Length: 492
Image (cartoon, rainbow, N blue to C red; front, side, top):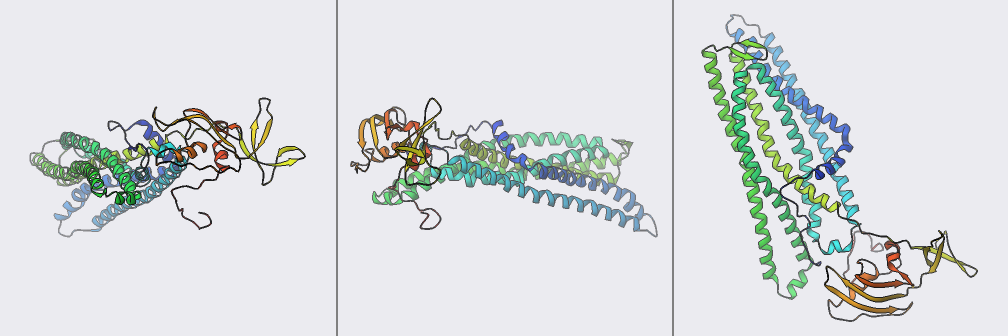
């Protein structure tokens, strides 16, 4: 089940660092062309909503109201303006549909590239990394963490950007109608933002904890399923159940806290929106009744019924994006927590290999051993010399340990002062109790771990000089734990 298991995904809860954003941007910028179209579509979608709301004033003041005071109304103008409004709304709908579809493609492409790179890098990590990190938590990088990224790229980021553009467009539209009513909205929104900031700050830290707890639970379950026979043999089910309950309780508490704060945001924002709607209707009605001069970007005029109706529509369009941003921020925070865990894995140092001796095909030419350019039944070690030439040493399989010390971590030696040898063709058996170091010795020959002191020589060559891939290619291993891989019997 691994030595010294820990949670590899622990991150600093107080920050979403710039490095994570930079790493994520490297993958996103590969889709620059698609993102340009997405930005354009979002702008079109946002401005069509604001323009349609402004048309409501024209519709009421210039068409509906005049038709109410004539005996034989002509509805052709009204129908024309309604068709224009319908066209504007249709353009907004098509733009929204377009950028939503494109962002699905972009998000899946980004995730595919991240998973490919993560898997490729994971295969270069030293064995010691997997000894100290639970398999279930590693799997969580490919599932839970990746899924939070998908949701952010496909939904949250477009929604947040669209909301900001909508806020700008609607704010400009409101100023073009009434500065006084716009000031009322700004003051009210300032109060809303204070509330949102408080709630979002509380939920954000719990979303990060939730992501970490989820990795812990996945890792624990994977280990317990893998070791189920051992658990049953030693009647350890009760203890394991207790440990699982503790981890599951942590996950439940963090998830409850995160979603408790997140889920009350939208109802609060909706309530604020309704209250603002009523407040603006009252203020607008009072200004209209008392014929208070109305200041707007177009100059000074009076408040009309169409202006009030249009402004009320704009106020709802102004509050809704703020509510969406406040809600999506939690998803963004959770996604960056997952992204930081992913990039933390990808930033782990690959297995170091400073070997210079390689394994090559060889053949005899007279009494001389030379490198062959075809597959032969003879293998040799190709060693570089100081003068730039190479010498070949035939692969025979002689292994010798000289005063070898080894520790998995720190100064806790597992093996001390080990001296042994195995001649070519000789059969050697390691016999001892579990944990005595039998498997460890074979792992040292493969250089899955580096020794703390002493030397290991293979055909007279210090194995530190041999490239790890070539060293392992020269050895045949039958593992004590059988793993079947997807594929044919022959491949396994």
